[in-house]
Length: 561
Image 1 (spheres, rainbow, N blue to C red):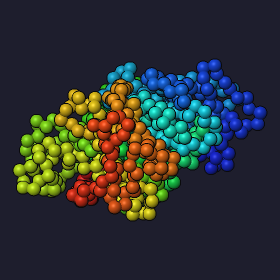
Image 2 (image 1 turned 90 degrees about the vertical axis):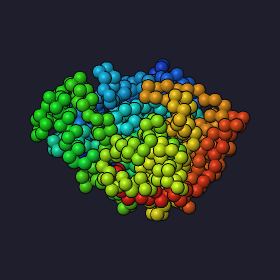
Image 3 (image 1 turned 30 degrees about the vertical axis):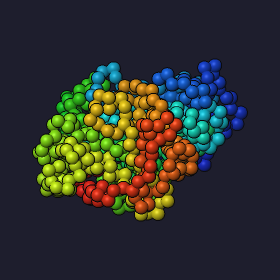
Image 4 (image 1 turned 90 degrees about the horizontal axis):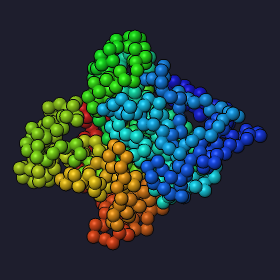
């Protein structure tokens, strides 16, 4: 394996025609363990088991956790692109215990003792009986969290594989906030912006190199993610302006959540906040040397000295990973062509970002909420927004309250419109397998404490991951009518992973899912009055008013997405 500094890792089988693993080294001695099943990669070997560290057990699925996919990003590797492991055959390799998660990455707000820098690991779930080279399709999940929090233990994928024992599932940790997304003139002279996105790409490329030993097909990879993870899916698809072939063939983008990409002056302001809190020089080679030498306890102060959501992906130049605004590149066709795509959102994504309904009583309240998140909007654009989304007092307004008006604006700015934007662009360029959806079932745990919310942001995550709720892994049990909701969405996602079509292996009670041609999408809904063995899901056409508002939003570069 070699690394080419700009475009990422060049797979060793491309460079030399051979991937070195234990299975193709003459006379290799396979390693075993009394702890459980072993997967031997030649350079290292890992033992897993069928019980998750969070207590979920399924004897038909084998879990391997905390597998490093690059070198620890410590010392001089801090604030740089991920560095390749030594993956040459190692006759002296021993078995590493991979029955647990790896440590989580440092988050924001940062607290000493919570999260580490040496966190770049991934997890694999395989059917228990899948043999090496079984060539099962693979799905790789990228967690959300605004690019400043989140970790793989929140998203266990046992159910995906148990319900669909013809796939292999993978999740990853990647660098967040300061360590994943610091940028600035000094860093670009001696470091790499968007390191967190490069971590994601490195993890997917590790999967390409080694997933066959777990039974997966390295040529049949789907990436998936929600919120910032959904944004990451889009950013991986628009990487390098679409000129480099991606290491995946399908993509699932859920509730695409991307905060405004910062302007150059904002990037430098953030860098100043970081260096001042660390008592480091603010420019020149001394700045990066000081930041790399600083202990984690010092950089925790820097993390907490940056406003939430201001450290995220940045446009890093014509030859960089993110050469332009993703919405703009999608409009121009500068994204990976030929991908199968699912892109959709939750019915009420925007409610999480609109605030308390009691505080939204006037146009001024609406504007204040919008600019809190989308800080680059001009007064003229804000006036246009108020016209497109008329106040409840305006005759014919579709909004009954200022709250409904506000959350709809917050939703359609990105969450509810980027999916249509990408789906339309893929269809326009000849893609056959392009699908969209609206997930219409709330997270009951969140709704119990926020009864004014409907199907709020991340409700789909609740059903995809065993009732996952909160930043600390917590899993609520499903009731009788929620069980088929979980089975349905996992069934659609797994069918898409296997075939590029979510309908082929869907649950028998799920509607056939048409492509986005004609603006058709599936609406996944709970059969609240049912007996627990079906859903109330249907197919709908995107309302014309919603579609027209979305086309307007995606033409506004002021949102900086």
